[in-house]
Image 1: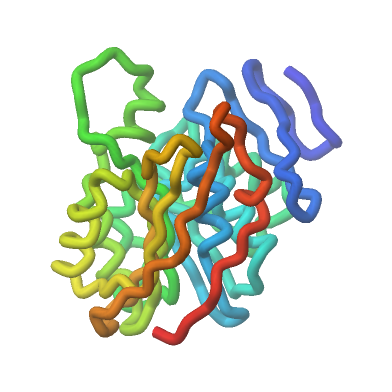
Image 2 (image 1 turned 30 degrees about the horizontal axis):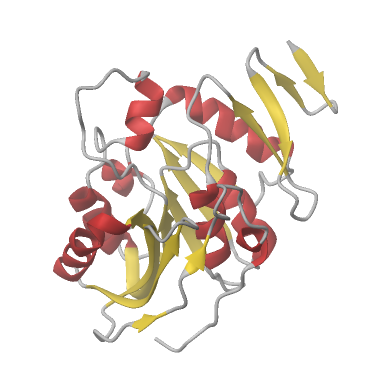
Length: 251
C-alpha cells in the first residue's frame, strides 16, 4: 500500500497518471478496465453551461467527468457506476482531485435512476458505454461488464437517457462506427434527435468511433463535423486528441 500526497492510499496494482489538463491526475488499476482515448474524445465534446446539471452513465474510474469538470462551468455531475471495484476507484479519484462538492458518485444500476433522479430533470447526459455485444470469450468480469452489453444494452441506455433528460436536454455518446445505424435508430425511437456527429479514424483509413450530440425533442437535422484522426500511421496517439475544440451550433 502506498500513500499519495496525503489524500488517498494506493492499493496494489494502482498507479497515478497525469491527465495533462488543469493539474488533474487519475488513479488507474492495471488489473481492472482502464480508460482509453475514447474517454478523452468524449470529454472534449461534452458542453455544459454554468447552471446545468449532468449525469454520466457508466463512469468507470471517473475520468470523463473529471476531465469535463476542467473544461466546463456547471452546477453538478452525478456519475452512475454499477461495479463495486470501479465505484471505489471512481470515488477515490473524485476525492483525489478535490471534486467532491461538484461530482457525486451514485453506486447502482442506472436503470433504477428514479431512486436518485427525477425523470425530466437533467440537462445533459453523457456516456462512453459498454458497446460490444456480449460473447462467450474468456474475459475478466470487470472488463467484460465495462466493455460488453452485459448489464447495459444500447436500448436501455437510450431509454434511460430520454427519461432523465429535460425537453431540449442534450445527450453525448461514443459508439463503434460499425454500429452507428443502431445508435441512430435507438436515439430516434426514444425521441433523441441527433444534431451533431463525427467519426474518428485510426490513421490507417479505418473509421473506429461515431460520436454524437442528440437533443431530446429536437428537430431531425444533423451536422456532420470533420473526422477526427486519432493515430499516426505507426499507431501513436496524436496530441490533437487532448485539445480539439468543437464548434457550438444552435439546436
